[in-house]
Image (cartoon, rainbow, N blue to C red):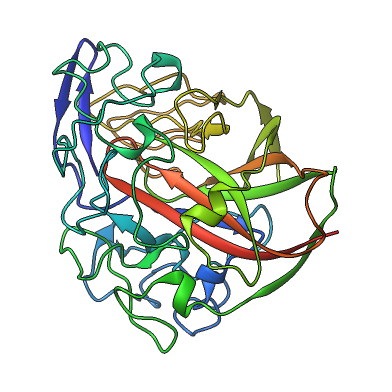
Length: 353
């Protein structure tokens, strides 16, 4: 996955060639278009009987998938976690689609300086000075939330035009193939979700592999071109409440961490990923939001931390602006990574009343 940190010294190393893989769980997204195909139907992710990825990436001896939890309900998201943009540095006009895990360089030599430099909002290497040589991830999307380019506001199948062998592969289906743009090939998928102006509502997302970073929810009117420019016009405010959700249906209220300075659109609010990275070689990057006991030398993932924290999902409270015009919208979920030059994107159909 990505890096090892010794406290006081930042060290980078490729631990496992897999990427961040965040997924919008609820409302279910257009990106879950494959969820009813046999390989994924019912919430299968990539076990021995439903190995859906030709690269045969494995973890614990089984093939990889978009593992997640949706409380006591099946987490039936198909290949949602494989719609993203690869090779995307802040300050660049476009992504390059090349190996980006981890990323420690300005991929287009733009000279762009990070705007998210307060250690409280960083998810890696908090103890090193911002923009110093030890601040190895300063060129990646979360260090200037919303600034890095993307291939598509609803993601690209497989993250780039061509598959990178170190990355989880997108399994080509009758619905989409590697390099397809989400806004162009994913059909409308009505969810039945109706959010009323002025109300507080909930949205849920999951993290398959942890590269730190943060995220934002946005809206674009149905019928408009689903571009970053459209989504950036309507970021959804956070309601200030966040919960962790486990597979037994239990919830834990936690304190969310929100950033509104140095973001794009200007002064829009982004939320920091609350699940700290750790592995067998490093302690957690910041305090976990739940009580957990884990021997990192035997299991690098706890109840709410680690490399692969898919046993828990995050529920966010959102506030639907009263100023919106009622009608059909597309909900955009954008996740900017910190240790990699990658951006995850999901799009879901909702109604605003």
